Length: 125
Image 1 (cartoon, rainbow, N blue to C red):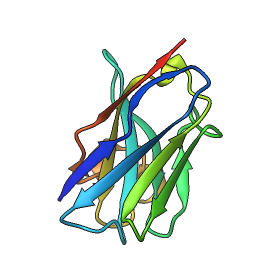
Image 2: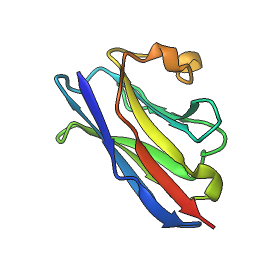
Image 3: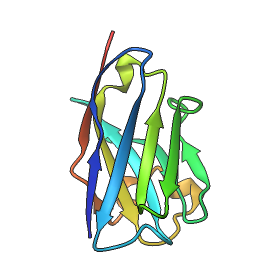
Image 4: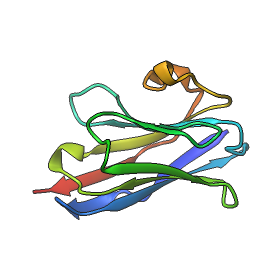
């Protein structure tokens, strides 16, 4: 299974971006997809996740601004990011677990089996 996250770029504070995550070798059906981010000198941080039935979960830092979704027809998962802040600057990764992850474990990077290469999001002030 290979994941590819794309859609990052440079945006001004207050702007929006949509990240996409596509998988080859496996469909997202039945899987949990997580979004994580890492900025230089910091640890990997959980951002959001979407579980097999479509329920979504977010970190407090992005709740109300970011939205995770899934297009089953295109077999793609998205992270819509609005009202971006400079603090959102990071490399964003999508990750996949080939079954359901319990809610309390969604933020644990070790729960995910496959990772994409990351896409850089830069928010200028």
